[in-house]
Image 1 (spheres, rainbow, N blue to C red):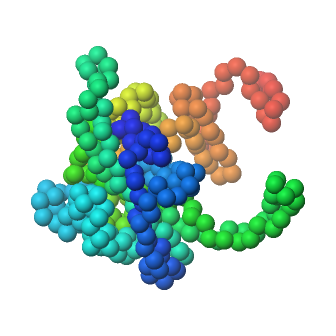
Image 2: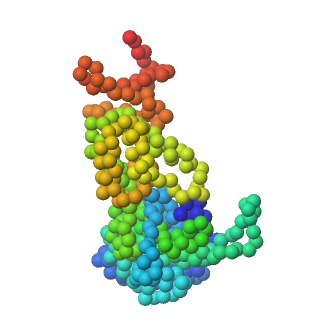
Image 3: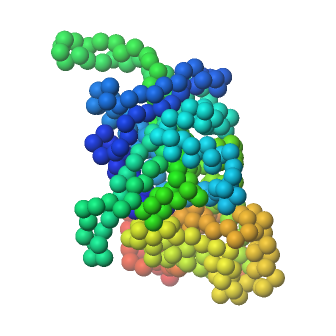
Length: 376
């Protein structure tokens, strides 16, 4: 799914726009046992309460693609004949009336989550009449496609702290007692994907509040499929992989070139939210190594280790493997940070056997806010 497609669905999730008529779910205790389940018709609750529920579920489509929002793919065999895909399709096609499939989904989610304490599972179904547009981008009256999807939010339930409140009607202060409140989603998913503005039953979208959290168990239990490693692990593994395989040829020039190329890829992608998220492959990095004259055998070593660590033909988000907003050089007790466009001003040199990090100074130079002179 593209950023634009996710935003299009996200904008719908409100009491006035969506086709969500009811919320199904269950309440799970600390022992991961279902205490109660429910089917709440939104027409029977106050509008502000309905909006609050949908606002919570809306967060399941927030964050960055590749970090908070991770796409997964079903194999052809899964779509043809598998318990997990059949379960999801049954929930969607029955308008969430298939109790057996919903109970199975609850069990899979509970088995696949490591949320501590109590949590609540919220499940909604929406039918979106996808508007059609003419070639000159004019909205047409008739909708050609109805996109039916389910949205699931898994939210911790936490005990609020006692606090001092104020009742305007009574014009007096009062103590607000502790109570159990639904927090923002920690996990969730959308099925099927909204791909090319229509249903793609071969894909789903998983949400995680914490980009560093491992989702292997959740993806395995609910979708019976593998998932890419967390963004933070991708960065650590990528950095370690370069350092390990290139070793003594891993100099500042190589890192600057990798950094510069990945930053440029992200910059070129900006503003193209209607296109799939930009990714990099093994070849992207090996091309940089070859440009920097890294020995062929080390380029090949990197390629083999890349396949082992990330998977053969794996593609990564450049935002996950480098910090494109800053360039940083560290040594004992000293950290040098630079805007990406000035990364080339930093060089390294050995003088009389000593290693130095050198920065070309242009314009004023400040030390703790004081302008200083640099003398020969």
